[in-house]
Image (cartoon, rainbow, N blue to C red; front, side, top):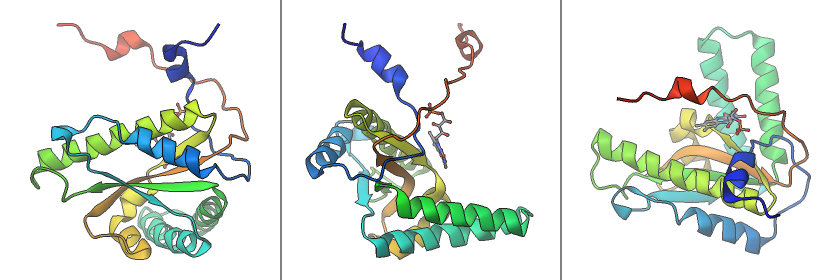
Length: 196
Ligand SMILES: Cc1cc2nc3c(=O)[nH]c(=O)nc-3n(C[C@H](O)[C@H](O)[C@H](O)COP(=O)(O)O)c2cc1C
């Protein structure tokens, strides 16, 4: 029996280990195109995708993100060894991910610059992001959504020479899964719902 759509939706997981294999261009294109079918506030489709491919772009991105990570961790009082280990691991992961898709919100593609419209823009981008994760899952690929660029938006824009209105929201690693995640612990649904 074919698994139902609901079973499919429940089976997506974050994957953090990938085989060292690239996804065919046609599949990558199909996944990005599917993401663009997401709903968006006023239908303005403010999502933008940056494919971080070349070793030099990866290196620039890794430097931008980890420099900021180092400063933030120092301010939080983290130990130097801990900072060193996290920075090294992050640089390695950015170098090794088969594909890196930086998900941005074009702040010029929202109705106005009010906090509400910008939030709706970010919500719209997140919709496209989830749709991207699910489209990848439908093709047997694993993904991991990473928040790091959100902490270093200006640094990421500079490092990748992005248009200044493309505000990085997240980074998605994608590739053939090389791990089986542990079963997921969900909160009891009853605790998440209020009826009035
Ligand atoms: C907004 C957001 C930010 C996230 N940031 C990170 C991150 O920086 N690093 C990471 O490894 N996973 C990150 N994740 C993935 C979550 O850790 C993961 O979705 C969660 O643990 C549930 O696991 P699952 O995706 O396998 O269902 C993020 C997910 C979301 C939605």
